Image (cartoon, rainbow, N blue to C red; front, top):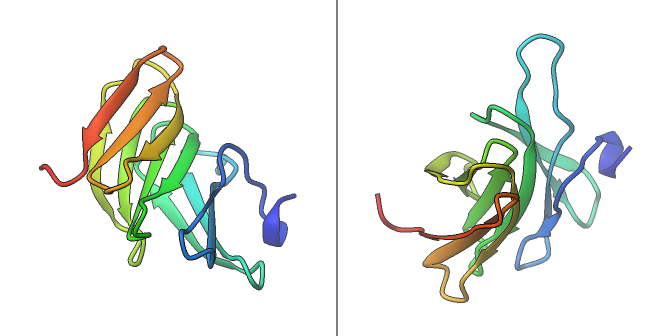
Length: 130
Protein backbone atom coordinates (compact mmCIF):
# COMPACT_ATOMS: atom_id res chain seq x y z
CA UNK A 1 0.00 0.00 0.00
CA UNK A 2 0.99 3.60 -0.54
CA UNK A 3 0.48 6.76 1.48
CA UNK A 4 -2.53 6.68 3.81
CA UNK A 5 -3.44 3.11 2.83
CA UNK A 6 -4.04 3.97 -0.84
CA UNK A 7 -2.27 2.06 -3.59
CA UNK A 8 -0.62 4.31 -6.13
CA UNK A 9 1.66 3.85 -9.10
CA UNK A 10 3.18 5.95 -11.81
CA UNK A 11 4.69 9.35 -11.18
CA UNK A 12 4.59 11.32 -7.97
CA UNK A 13 4.59 15.11 -7.85
CA UNK A 14 5.02 17.49 -4.93
CA UNK A 15 3.41 20.92 -5.16
CA UNK A 16 5.91 23.79 -5.43
CA UNK A 17 5.11 24.88 -1.87
CA UNK A 18 5.74 21.27 -0.72
CA UNK A 19 2.36 20.96 1.03
CA UNK A 20 0.70 18.43 -1.33
CA UNK A 21 1.73 15.17 -2.92
CA UNK A 22 -0.16 14.04 -6.01
CA UNK A 23 -0.10 10.61 -7.66
CA UNK A 24 -2.22 8.34 -9.85
CA UNK A 25 -4.19 5.85 -7.77
CA UNK A 26 -4.62 2.21 -8.67
CA UNK A 27 -7.09 1.61 -11.50
CA UNK A 28 -10.45 1.23 -9.73
CA UNK A 29 -13.57 -0.77 -10.35
CA UNK A 30 -15.02 -4.15 -11.14
CA UNK A 31 -17.39 -2.87 -13.80
CA UNK A 32 -16.55 0.35 -15.64
CA UNK A 33 -13.14 1.41 -14.42
CA UNK A 34 -12.37 4.87 -13.11
CA UNK A 35 -9.09 6.78 -13.41
CA UNK A 36 -8.29 8.45 -10.09
CA UNK A 37 -5.69 10.95 -8.96
CA UNK A 38 -4.90 11.18 -5.25
CA UNK A 39 -3.90 14.39 -3.46
CA UNK A 40 -2.27 14.03 -0.02
CA UNK A 41 -1.27 16.51 2.68
CA UNK A 42 2.50 16.00 2.95
CA UNK A 43 2.69 17.02 6.63
CA UNK A 44 0.01 14.59 7.83
CA UNK A 45 -0.01 11.91 5.12
CA UNK A 46 -3.80 12.32 4.95
CA UNK A 47 -5.49 11.74 1.61
CA UNK A 48 -7.25 15.06 0.97
CA UNK A 49 -8.91 14.33 -2.35
CA UNK A 50 -9.55 11.69 -5.00
CA UNK A 51 -10.04 13.28 -8.40
CA UNK A 52 -11.88 11.29 -11.05
CA UNK A 53 -10.63 11.92 -14.59
CA UNK A 54 -12.40 11.13 -17.87
CA UNK A 55 -9.64 8.70 -18.83
CA UNK A 56 -10.10 5.53 -20.84
CA UNK A 57 -7.09 3.94 -19.14
CA UNK A 58 -4.74 4.23 -16.18
CA UNK A 59 -3.00 7.48 -15.30
CA UNK A 60 0.76 7.41 -15.73
CA UNK A 61 2.38 10.79 -15.09
CA UNK A 62 1.74 13.93 -13.06
CA UNK A 63 3.41 17.31 -12.44
CA UNK A 64 2.59 20.75 -11.04
CA UNK A 65 3.01 24.07 -12.80
CA UNK A 66 5.71 26.33 -11.30
CA UNK A 67 3.07 28.51 -9.59
CA UNK A 68 1.26 25.43 -8.22
CA UNK A 69 -2.11 26.43 -9.69
CA UNK A 70 -2.25 23.74 -12.40
CA UNK A 71 -1.70 19.98 -12.32
CA UNK A 72 -0.86 18.18 -15.56
CA UNK A 73 -1.76 14.49 -15.73
CA UNK A 74 -0.94 11.96 -18.45
CA UNK A 75 -2.59 8.65 -19.21
CA UNK A 76 -2.09 5.29 -20.85
CA UNK A 77 -4.55 6.45 -23.53
CA UNK A 78 -2.10 9.15 -24.70
CA UNK A 79 -4.05 12.12 -23.37
CA UNK A 80 -2.88 14.96 -21.13
CA UNK A 81 -5.26 16.79 -18.79
CA UNK A 82 -4.73 20.14 -17.10
CA UNK A 83 -6.52 20.45 -13.77
CA UNK A 84 -7.12 23.46 -11.61
CA UNK A 85 -5.08 22.57 -8.51
CA UNK A 86 -7.53 24.25 -6.13
CA UNK A 87 -10.94 23.01 -7.24
CA UNK A 88 -9.62 19.93 -9.13
CA UNK A 89 -11.66 20.46 -12.30
CA UNK A 90 -10.35 19.66 -15.77
CA UNK A 91 -9.55 22.88 -17.64
CA UNK A 92 -8.02 21.43 -20.81
CA UNK A 93 -7.47 18.08 -22.50
CA UNK A 94 -4.78 17.48 -25.11
CA UNK A 95 -4.68 14.50 -27.47
CA UNK A 96 -1.87 13.50 -29.78
CA UNK A 97 0.26 10.66 -28.44
CA UNK A 98 -0.26 7.23 -29.97
CA UNK A 99 0.59 5.48 -26.73
CA UNK A 100 1.02 6.10 -23.01
CA UNK A 101 2.25 9.45 -21.71
CA UNK A 102 5.40 8.65 -19.73
CA UNK A 103 6.56 12.07 -18.54
CA UNK A 104 5.42 15.67 -18.15
CA UNK A 105 7.23 18.95 -17.48
CA UNK A 106 6.13 22.57 -17.38
CA UNK A 107 8.26 25.38 -18.77
CA UNK A 108 9.61 27.74 -16.10
CA UNK A 109 7.02 30.40 -17.03
CA UNK A 110 4.14 27.86 -16.86
CA UNK A 111 2.86 28.77 -20.32
CA UNK A 112 3.64 25.43 -21.92
CA UNK A 113 3.80 21.82 -20.79
CA UNK A 114 5.78 19.10 -22.54
CA UNK A 115 4.66 15.48 -22.65
CA UNK A 116 6.87 12.55 -23.55
CA UNK A 117 5.23 9.41 -24.83
CA UNK A 118 5.94 5.74 -25.36
CA UNK A 119 5.44 6.54 -29.06
CA UNK A 120 8.88 8.25 -28.82
CA UNK A 121 7.44 11.73 -29.35
CA UNK A 122 7.66 14.85 -27.25
CA UNK A 123 4.76 17.25 -27.62
CA UNK A 124 4.63 20.85 -26.47
CA UNK A 125 1.20 22.13 -25.44
CA UNK A 126 0.26 25.78 -24.93
CA UNK A 127 -1.48 25.95 -21.56
CA UNK A 128 -3.54 29.10 -22.09
CA UNK A 129 -4.96 28.48 -25.57
CA UNK A 130 -8.46 27.10 -26.07
